[in-house]
Amino acid sequence: MRQKFEIHELVARFADCVNRKAMDQMPHLFTPDAVLDIPGFSQHIVGRDNIITFLTDILSLWSGIVQAVHSGTVVLVSDTHPQRATGRWYLSEFGVKENVDTYVGGVYSDDYVRTASGFRFTRRRFDLLYLRAGTSVTAQPFPADLP
Image (cartoon, rainbow, N blue to C red; front, side, top):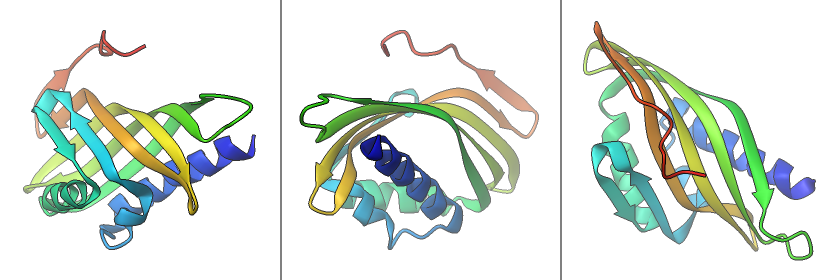
């Protein structure tokens, strides 16, 4: 159960870094070879440094943002050697992006590995489920290719 708590804390630290735009603390959350996938925006970013650069650029578009993590699940790959796990987390983001009131709802699908410093993201995939930017609204079903 401790492993699941550690992963929950990792996810919470990611949201905290986003909310504070604390990109200097974000590298500690990813493995050096981590991958960030955002299928709806055709983004596939490989490597911790590239992920941090991408997130820094995206967050610079927001004059204010709140990312709230909602329900989530964590599955340990093995009970006997709980060094790897997967997770799914629903979230919402709201704030002002490029001078437009914006609300985002989506889901992160994650892979984690335990390092000497604790669990880290090895892969994060973000799928957009809902987007309201000003008066424009887009809604999408849960991705069919996710379990």
